[in-house]
Image 1: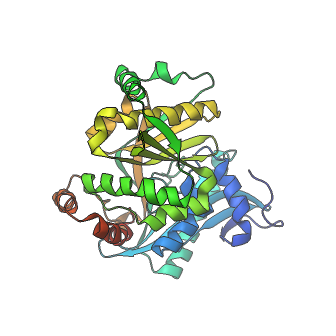
Image 2: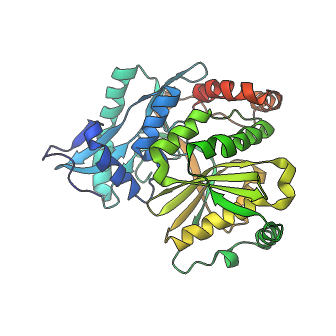
Length: 363
């Protein structure tokens, strides 16, 4: 994890360069808080699909990586000129080497204003927005304003973990129902399968929810650049795909990011079966954490809590505090009105407009 990166050098933050990519990815993949958005394949996908300019930095000492910081320049109508870590994601921020003591973390953070200043010179930004920031110990040392939003849910997977005993009765009932109805599960691996099977479900789900979809190119780019980490499982009723679950395995954790389903088949409880099989498979693989992500609203919280999760605070971090603009809220009147309007946008048009809206909001 902290192996050699370059010849001996003075401690400090350095801009990312392609030769360091393998060491960066190894560092992120071995980190307990590492997620797919920390990997360089995500960087390439966002560059190619959304055209955002990356701003990646690494802290090294004596040729060893001690911290990494991924981010992108983002300029929009609503949020102005900002640096986002990470766009289109629930997480971001610095990953410190897990063996870094408190004093070393403080020293790394003490040098971080230089990163912000160099970034400002390169991109004329007003402020930095960090999402989630799971490796945030020491991040409250006056550099950031913390804005608490909701909770996030994780499920530790200790050796000998028995998922069936951990979930509540409704999960067991729904999994039994799905199996008794003859649902089958398969993994999607190829671009053709993502295009023909997953993406139509994605469009259908987000239209129902009133949310702009990612363009197909986003998922194809992730598959191309991060395919070894991808876990895209689909539930079938006979020859009909009725639901899909997109997850990412990085190191010892699996994180889910997208649930897609056909509401005409809700009674078969396919999403419960997909979650159960993915978590059970993670246990079999020896993974140690299943990351459900944030709990934004009551229904989402109720669904995820039935899996026996632990909840943690979820927050955004801003620097400098006085410049930040509040995060987008699902509860505001404009957001509710936008969801209502979006449900009536034709799917073909939604795919094209979705890219523009996603890029504007970096969600």
